[in-house]
Length: 206
Picture (cartoon, rainbow, N blue to C red):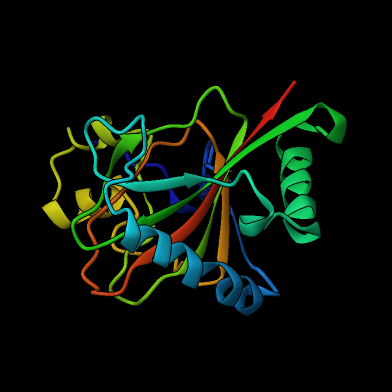
């Protein structure tokens, strides 16, 4: 077979087509929020452990809405990060045409959430108020996971290509992650005996 001389070949480029953008940031006053919210929230969890999310049919998760000042977390940091992300993704800067829905989750070792998305919201966020080493953050799934699964490759290669478990994004307590609401994710059972506590929200543009 004829081969082109190497001096006639160009240097190949590796390009990432349509990557999924996410933002991971550390909340500056995390300890203040954790000390103010987590103890009272855990007391509420222990006094009423059967308060599962009303929409949970195929999962087991404990959830309360952030509908009073006791659990108010949103501050200027969240606001700035959210609107910077909206501007980056969609060129959207109009804060008057945004609605925000937020809630708090508590998970023990038996609790989990099945794979889901947050559509029709625009972007979503998770802030980890309490997250031990053995408490896994949300696992995000590759939008092309079904196609990747068809590739004849070692199982470990398939695993890495299809999701972020156990913690390839290196998410830690005090981190906020923002992501497009169409991105599929799930929450696995924890290996830690300590409770996993998170503040989640959806941002919808109008």
